[in-house]
Image (cartoon, rainbow, N blue to C red; front, side, top):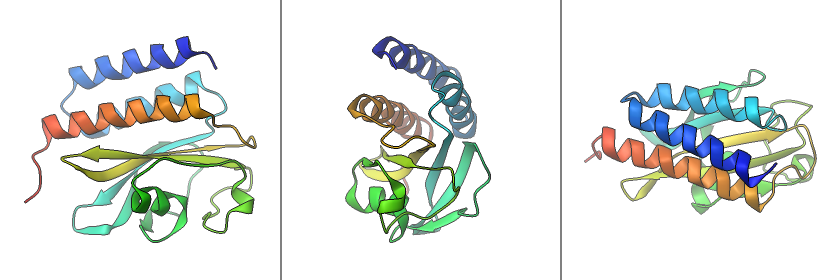
Length: 162
């Protein structure tokens, strides 16, 4: 994947973020455009912290095979690890990581990127690939920029909880 492709997607995501006031619409736009342009992103979705239970991630908009993991405690899985560590987690071979919560037998690698708003992690972008070691530092940088756009959108359009 070229830097040009990542840059073009970021331009479109940023423009869409400026044209909507609906977080779900922005998330749906992102989960549509990314796998369309990046075919090795086989499952693309959002998990957001439950405002009533901040120790649980709740599945938001996604594209890919259905998952039974609609609620994930932040103490479990790669998704939970990204929140707990407050950092991007890349797993080259999910079957070699005991934290992996199996969703699809086809999934071979995963990247999870926290979304921060109002000074805290509020959710994450989760990507699975059917390829081993699919995600590079370029993917990480790209997805961190997407997460920053979402975080900025949340800060602008949703007040901080008290």
